[in-house]
Image (cartoon, rainbow, N blue to C red; front, side, top):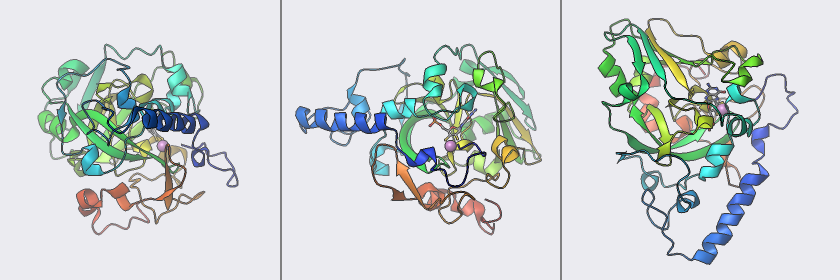
Length: 327
Ligand SMILES: Nc1nc2c(c(=O)[nH]1)N[C@H]1C(S)=C(S)[C@@H](COP(=O)(O)O)O[C@H]1N2
Ligand SMILES: [Mo]
């Protein structure tokens, strides 16, 4: 996300794929050429279609009992973004506003133990220990496209549980029209919160049907491993048809309520960031076009797709809505 004090004439930092990412990619291409076409890429990706990152040994604790889903790399038909880029090119303002800040500054953050508060219009509100909260659910891997409002994008094999299953378990009442999410607010553990670049805690929200959509995932891992701190450990949201800032990290609270909740980016710049924030190439950001995006690792830009390519799955939820007004 860009800070709003930037001038319109500034080139968004997102326009520039960081050199380290290019360099890594080039290095991979060379290595792959040497290794030859028969190289095995591990168990997640089909051979020959794989991500370079999977060729490397494990980097974090592996998650056990993760099942495959129908959202595979093959079904998406796109290359995975390298693990290194996914974990070093981040937006997580609680650890600084620079792209490499989270990876550099969140190393000492300890997301264990973690509790998650469920509040409001549900039959089973309470404060849950995260491990107990996750345990009844089957972890699954889903390869999703992910597009930041800054016009860069990635393809990531997330591991998580469908938010719909969690909501069903909590028993929403008739007043549960929206879900509000909050990130941990603890400047001692999240030093970026000492600067008021946003109103802390970071807040996000979804309409209940969006939260219950089969695509919506509560993420606890990526690349088969426990979610790295910089990517929002221990639990973050993933709504692949919306801009990246909806994907709130390090969640400590979910509140079910009748009113549309306030969201951090909307509070910070209402003209620029709406509640819905569906990826929409025909609604430009006031300061830049949303028609194209740069896939991290690519040189050329590609056209952005309506709802980030998930129109078939989610378009119906917005039938009859003016998405220029409700951006
Ligand atoms: N708590 C919190 N969640 C956040 C952010 C943040 O600054 N704080 N940044 C958002 C933005 S703008 C993006 S693009 C994604 C980035 O996720 P990634 O670093 O895993 O790619 O996280 C989103 N979730
Ligand atoms: Mo973003």
